[in-house]
Image 1 (tube, rainbow, N blue to C red):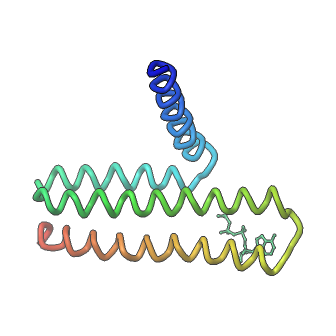
Image 2: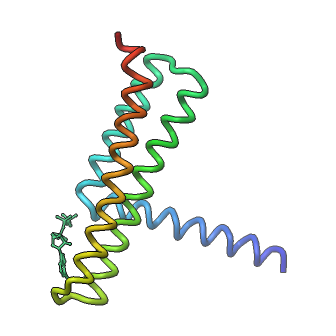
Length: 120
Ligand SMILES: Nc1ncnc2c1ncn2[C@@H]1O[C@H](COP(=O)(O)OP(=O)(O)OP(=O)(O)O)[C@@H](O)[C@H]1O
């Protein structure tokens, strides 16, 4: 019984990983996030940022990825459930997109606070 619990958890991890791969393959802006993540992590290594700075950097990257992925889920879900135009769908999609904007602005501010002192 314990074995089947562990194998189910491993399978769930695999499905979640497949979700990340599907997101990157299907969404062009996800590939921009991959590039941005590589650039930020490379800069963090180059400037040897401190442990607390790493924590904020990783949280900012994760925040943007998470909101972008959930926004994609909302868009796909609404297109599937309600392909026709509807004001409520517009509201749902625009609020989800707004969440991405909030995360992106927060990440940009965190990045500026951390990296500007290292660069200059
Ligand atoms: N089914 C719908 N009913 C009403 N408004 C919609 C519907 N689908 C999209 N919209 C609205 O039309 C506008 C553009 O939608 P669209 O999905 O193209 O946004 P987008 O963010 O540019 O998409 P993508 O991220 O796929 O490029 C948004 O304001 C969105 O809320």
